[in-house]
Picture 1 (cartoon, one colour):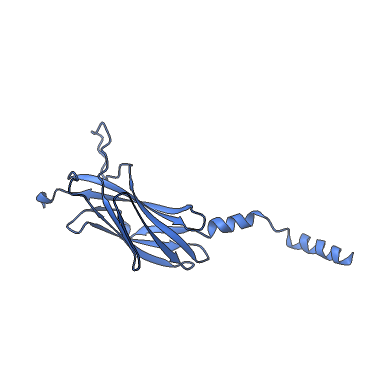
Picture 2 (cartoon, rainbow, N blue to C red):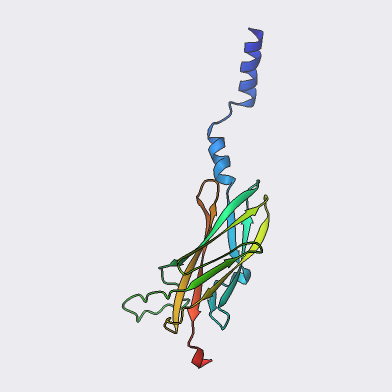
Length: 171
């Protein structure tokens, strides 16, 4: 009886643990942030493509793996608003090359690499966009880059990169 009384007093003083803390820890344990170097999310394709240096930061308190997925995005991504356009222009198709120091993925629809980070660790990776030979000049292409938690497959963060395809004869 005395042990039961002590147990009840400990629970009253310390509080009963809440069961929802477990789900909060899971959702917080796989958070990340993606940023682009110098906040330059708009670039023109040059002779070697448009190169973006991105950083992935694990903002959680534990080691996590993330899938970095780059896909063509259909939303308009020009950095200039043109109210004279009565219809939205289609985005140009692009080839996307994702690279880290130990993996690489190239595609014209979806590229993926995996990055594992310790708590609060940051790692750089690059995305190079190139245009197929049939691409119309003076158009834009959009790329959505997402960090997806490898454990619970939720999107932790995303960024849109805008790529301009200039006419090389006008250089």
